[in-house]
Length: 190
Length: 190
DNA sequence: GTCACAAACTAACGTTCGTTAGGCAATAGT
DNA sequence: ACTATTGCCTAACGAACGTTAGTTTGTGAC
Image 1 (cartoon, rainbow over the protein chains, first blue to last red):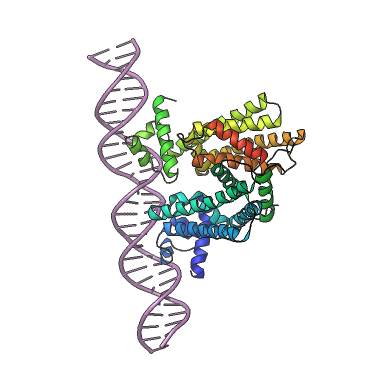
Image 2: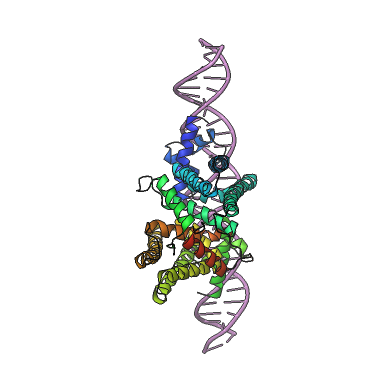
């Protein structure tokens, strides 16, 4: 990928973040780059191409993260904390793409959509297995594994809705707080 | 609101749920109702009118729910459990609208958008106050209140992504599980 | 029977959409 | 110096968009 292509990609993602993929026109993207709409097609084959690249680049990052966690860390709490930390890091370091990954992937069509969904499911299964490991090890409460992993992922993903780069919480702090919350809950130990 | 208008509204919401508001055309809605696009304008002034009604009807339900909780329930854990239960009930009983409420409100414009955001913020503040009460009462851990309430809301809202009416969990069960998870976390008490 | 009204229709408006065709200027390789 | 390639341009395509105007149809009230 050329530098120019990366630059156009980043700018597109910025516009998508603001208006959403479906409500953003190719002309909006071009305007943000101060170029003509038609010129975009020297770099991308279609508007959906931009969405596709964005979604799959993010999917790959998450795929690598879950692999890393499973390769290196041994006990379940450690694994879960690390998975959350990596997840938060990916989201915050790629905030525009992350929002598109979470919010706009539905606009993919055909085979891309199917492939994306299966990658998403694979990642979710990765998290679910960590939860399962914890239960097997006796350190997590027996619980509905699917339910628990969906709840974990939802609270992690939601940070893209309020995270600001110049806010008072950095990614590491967020990950720690989130992990504490997920592991220990709100209620004071009796 | 006439029955026919309600019917058209419900059908529109169903189409919006599938494709998203921005990607849905007035012609898509009309086709689902087996009527002509122009006929919709006997009932609604614009496509955005449908979105507006949907979002604000949902906002009102949530507004009433938080009021009810604050009027009736006294201790913080009870309040939080009830708020979650009502929230889940609203989502599951109005699944199509709920998805639009959560996902598509950004497509509102002008004053409607501002008003919607302020209603949303008010609701979030209601939840935050419940958390605050719990901390004051000494039953919740001292924590970042904003962070905690956002995390709670995110995990509750995410159920619209996977909840199926014919699934094996009903709304009450989901609310209980979610409350348990939020209050006690994943980790076994030491 | 006719009047009023609601709710649907047909037809079309002007705009915006994603995309393509074809050309022009600059740059790099030989 | 010539050629190929890259990256942008202008112009425009056909399709789809949200919406409006004006008309017809069906229904209930008097």
